[in-house]
Length: 387
Ligand SMILES: Cc1cc2nc3c(=O)[nH]c(=O)nc-3n(C[C@H](O)[C@H](O)[C@H](O)COP(=O)(O)OP(=O)(O)OC[C@H]3O[C@@H](n4cnc5c(N)ncnc54)[C@H](O)[C@@H]3O)c2cc1C
Image (cartoon, rainbow, N blue to C red):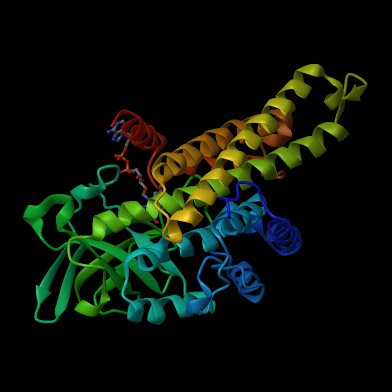
């Protein structure tokens, strides 16, 4: 009899060591420049591809490493510990491709997952619009049928890694009178005629990851690019988030761990009043609280990952939606608190770009906002509890 795994196995810990070594050696040294120059870290991408870590979740049947959800969490966590922007490479590759894994035809999976597994293409996810954020079902992007093609028109907003990704899962309205049941999902390619991108958003954090509008003007694509049946796109979009909110939790854990590690190193070195500041009990309690919140969020995230893995393999998991929202919400709130406290522990130095904790504090903020704000996560959890 097999039981769900809630704790990492030896293989998971070995994977963690591998990713941590790569992150310390190759990703951390480039993190400040990716932030400062607001440039996508292509060198990091190449290193992740060389180590086969850019999209570990893709099953072996599509040329991938076939890593389970917990292994994927660990990869994202360890990359984020060094550079949150870089962690969006494995995270968004998962976000863009889970709709295909859940709902697409075998042909579509074979065609679009293999290049991602091979490191030849990245995949973004385009749900949000300028007027439809938390209320994503209010989207206006239209996909109108024209013979055996669809013609897409509209503007998707805030799309992570837009412009650097080759492929996009795009949700669009096919049946305007049917509400959320009138939304369908499609694969759109960067090179499809009529696809263009807005300028890079000028953001507080994750500056190494481009966030841009995806503008669709009379983009004509074959009907075979629809993911699943007509009208199932919104359902697929939400089912995807059940799995990928856990990866945002992983990103938050990594950012928080990076800040905590740095702050611990600092307070053991820095002297004031003739002693190490680590000897002041006021700071000891802060460090203990930071580590406690982080570990609680980590255990919840790993439990959620175990449930995600079960669900991906076809076992119905009634509380996956609750767990993925709870993990994302708890880990991102913890990351915001922990990174803010890390800046505090470094005093004035923490407030400068000479140390990484201010970047980590800015990067942590997004984890409370995307893939549903934490207000929306609380709504989702309450709905599960009260239904
Ligand atoms: C850097 C970045 C990257 C992103 N990447 C992607 C991506 O790759 N793909 C994608 O599709 N989207 C992406 N998003 C979009 C993101 O998911 C949305 O920004 C988010 O869902 C919130 O939508 P909104 O910005 O329109 O805010 P709004 O929905 O306008 O919310 C504004 C405020 O109102 C609150 N609020 C709204 N409704 C309620 C309610 N019913 N009850 C209580 N409070 C409520 C919100 O919590 C928030 O505090 C990204 C966003 C950012 C900033």
